[in-house]
Image (tube, rainbow, N blue to C red):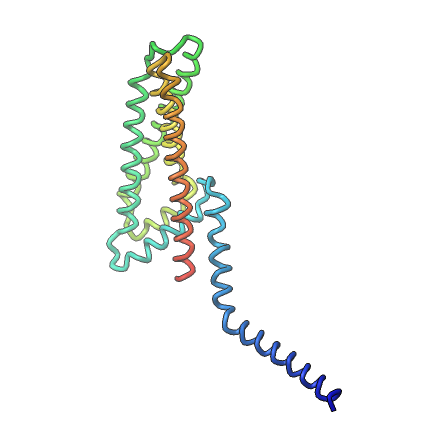
Amino acid sequence: MSIKTQPEDHNFEIRERILFSQTKDQTQPEDHNHEFRRRRLSSFARDHPLEFINSSGRIKLCELLNKEDINNEGLLYERLTKQYEIIGVVSALITATLGMVLDNTNVHDGYKTTYDLINGIGIIFSLTCVVDCLILTALLSIIEKKEVLGFVKHGAIFLSKPLICIMVGILCMYICVTMYFGGFKVLVLFPCTLILFTLSFIFYIRQRCYVLDRLNKEEILL
């Protein structure tokens, strides 16, 4: 009698496990797929934080801002205009600062050529940033607010150019201003400059990854 009941009990246990696994799969696939999509969409923010020329994240952000503008008040237009106006003004200040320290008599003759090259690169990149911001703000002011999203999609790959230029300009300004004092003062100020610039850059990368990650989560919810 025990020989007959043992396989029945064993089969019942197998059927119970199969039923439990099916029930578990039916109750949790949505959460599992949601987490999978979230990780896949946020992989750009974690794995490629330095790909500034990637336009997909910028387009997604503009699309979300455009969807939030229910009353068609030009939210995306105002955000873009303000952003590039600020970048243009800061780039102009960087250009002026580099011009002020261009004639530096405190730099050793052996480093004079390097100093002039760094200063020149900073001025060129900063001026390029100013020109790009002027172009963008001028073109944004003559198109309809409902066409701003199409404007962004058409030139999304170039919208990161002013940001790259201003970063190069800031780096050159840091170096030139530090070298401007000359002598022993440079050895004291250079570590502080390097640490502060690195911390600012890390802060930007962390916050940029956070914004992209939140953007991907918002896209999943939509």
